[in-house]
Length: 356
Image (cartoon, rainbow, N blue to C red):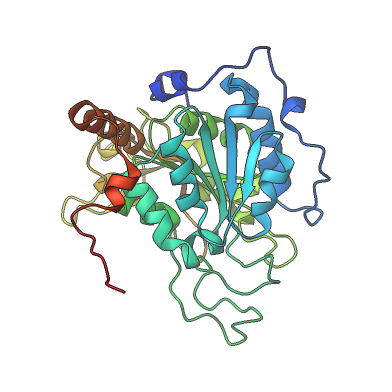
């Protein structure tokens, strides 16, 4: 991902800049990091702490809001403001914060259970409103904090403590869900790929509006190796499709495979590249307003084997930002009617007095 791919966020100019150059150390809190040894959360935390100085923002104007789950310890470990909030409600709380304090950079940290089960409704409405939030969705396809029950992203047939005969639920695809909710920025990355993870975080930070980043994250205690096919160098060559804006969607050994559109159905499919079909290979464009192709890309991966899993930015489009629209609406109301009066509002035409 190059700098020309980044959709610059003018809203960042509203946030105070750091007075001095910052380092990763400045974003580490004094709290002991307590996750299971080997947990993928450590890698994500290190990547975020290492990336934050690049923003050049005052850390006092950065806020991390989390819900409930292993990933939701995140605010404790960031030397910024933060809130460990209510199960599933982090997007709602962050929405209130972002819309009322446009001088803050607001980040949501959530998990597949927290955001897609009890929090599903809050997530989709934050996405459709396009609030200026950055949502990091840690997906380990299991409930880790409550000791290994199946989650909304667990594959069909998953054997867990709560599904001893195998899960019957069809899993959510978080990227598909986000694109379906008209999210203006949607990406996927992997916890162990520091370089890719950092590039996606940078693009998300630079995006005006809601940015959702799904992070495949390993739970080595209750779902170890869930994404191993995407991490093993040899198998990943055939399993991972790296999306790069403006580039043909090719992958595999010597880029021998590519993605084309079936002229009959309009669906996307993976083919062996030949001289005859090379001109049909799809060129990735994150800026297309229609979500159709981005959604089709999100459906390429086999949910059981994860074969042909795209990672990278799926969609990065401009839409009106909710915070800006609300601020403009409030300014217009003040210009037309003056500042409101709470007592007058409460005692307005729709009140009555009950006789004693």
